Amino acid sequence: MSWEDVKVKIEGAEYDGKMRGNEIFVPIMVEDAEPTIEVDGKPAQVESVRVDDRDSVVYITVKADAKKQRSKSDDKPVEGRDDDKAGGGGV
Image (cartoon, rainbow, N blue to C red; front, side, top):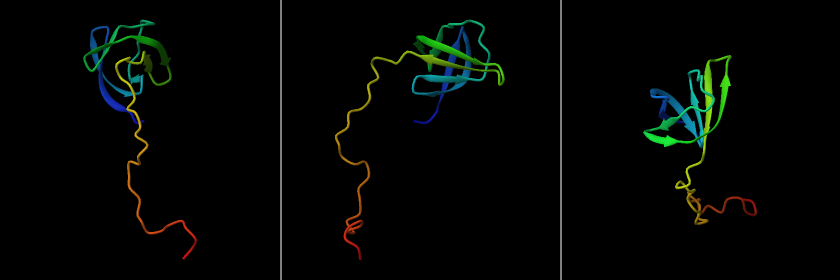
């Protein structure tokens, strides 16, 4: 899973951040232990806040959105394979 660019509104001020899963990275310092936030315009409930004083950044974990469910696998490969008899009994 890679980081996605998001707009994060914390206590009314908007910042550029990165989000991976339910973890948000914002290059600011947050005074409030549990700020009210919005991610891309949608309210998010804060689960935890971790401040990194060394780099003046904050990691915010939000509660997972109940409506977002992982897509179910159909057990079919995403990429096909070549029918070149690879990996068999030698050449």
